Structure formats: structure tokens, C-alpha cells
Length: 292
Picture: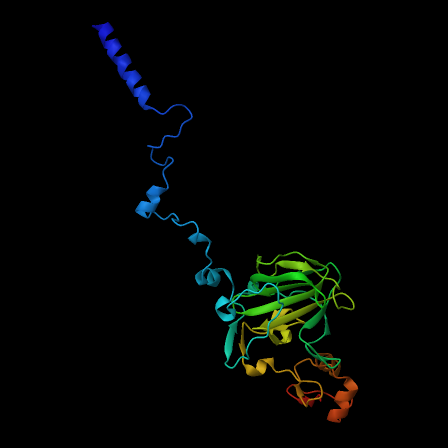
């Protein structure tokens, strides 16, 4: 009887072993094991069914991955700035929520302000630096341009979620590529004097839809901070005097005739002559001086 029971047990064990997968083979019947992808297609379990359809870039993808895509409608990585139609409404730009939301690209004195220079438009603010100094992104955003340009030298343009774009020119080296996402204060490159430049400095521009905004309207360059967390854009924001036109300058706190001369590109002697004042005259905050 015992021998018969042993024979039965041996036979059952052999039968069970035959049901197990051979060593090294996949157990396709196990939970969590390899499965046929058709099962997901039939049950709609969330896998992509049409692989070709997954390669199609949609407008929703653009809106999610490209900052301010609804404002620009494109992502041009070749043209540094394309002037768009004139702004006709008032647009409220939120620049920062916290102190860490913004950063001065470089802490240096202004060597050439925004405005008319030698009879031509100068669309940025030049800040003194030493070759090799790190240049930081003013706000968080995505790199749209990173290349060499005959005028700007090594130049980087960053588009920010609020639609503002910032440009950093004349760098000795670029440390970011097109499509890189950056935070405020991230290093974009190293300062230098490449392109059309005389001496090491950073050419810093702020633009909206390709239209230039005086960076000093956004930043207090001497203190290295934003003037306000919000900035309103209107049609007059982009007005800049043309050479030979009549214009005026409103004196700010701390202004001197020399500082006004640097900002406007008009010699101190000319400002004094036009306004019938001397170089030693006391300026009043809010005072309007003719500069043309």
C-alpha cells in the first residue's frame, strides 16, 4: 500500500512540474508578468494605441511646453527679434511674486543707457563686467536663442511665461542651449566682448512682442532689484525719441546732469544750453528738462 501511495505522489509531482514554465522562460500567466499589448488596446487601459499619432505635436503641446505661446503663436529659434504689430491695449505684466523670482544679470555700472546713441537707437542697457564674469537669467523661462551673431557676439535670448523676453549679448561663452529651461539667477554664459563691442560689457535688453522696453523701467540697476512686481505696458511704452525730435526728460531722485547725459546720449553742455542752466545748477525731482 505504501509503495502504491508513493507511486501516486510521484506521478502527481511529475504532472505538476510539467505545468511549470521551463527554466528561463517568461511566465505569461502571472499577474504583473509580460502581457500582450493588444490587451491594453482592447481594454483602453491607457497605453498609446497608434504610435504614429503619438509623434504629432499639437497646439496643446505647444501651450504646455512653450512659454507665452498664446501670446506669440510660434517658437522661432533663428530670428533674434521679430517686431510684431503695435500694442494697442494696456497689458499688465506680473514680473515677480517673491524675491527669488528675479535676478540682476550682472552687478555693474551702466556704461551706455537705453536710448539714442550717436544718432542711432540703442535698444538695451550696457553694464560693465570683466571677461569671464557669470551672466545670470533675469527671470525663469526657456532659452529661445543661443548662438553667435555678428552684432551681439555670443548671444542668448530667454522667453519668460509672462511674454517678456530678455537678451544677453557680447558674452565670451554661452553655457545654455536652445530649449533649456532656466530659473532666475541661473548662469547663461560668461561675460566678454564678442561681436560689435568695444571693451567687456553685457548688452541687456528687455522686449515684449519684439518691441524694446528700457530695462531701467523694470530694474533699479544701481540697487540690483525690480522697481515693482508689476509693470503695465501700453502704446507709449515703446515710444522712443528719434534723432532731431523735441523731447524732455523728467528728473528722478539721485539724478545728476552727467547721469541724464548718459541716459539720453545728449552732452551735458547741450542740456545746459537748451534749458539755459549751468552745469552747477540744482536739479529738482520731477523737473522736466528739454533734451532736444
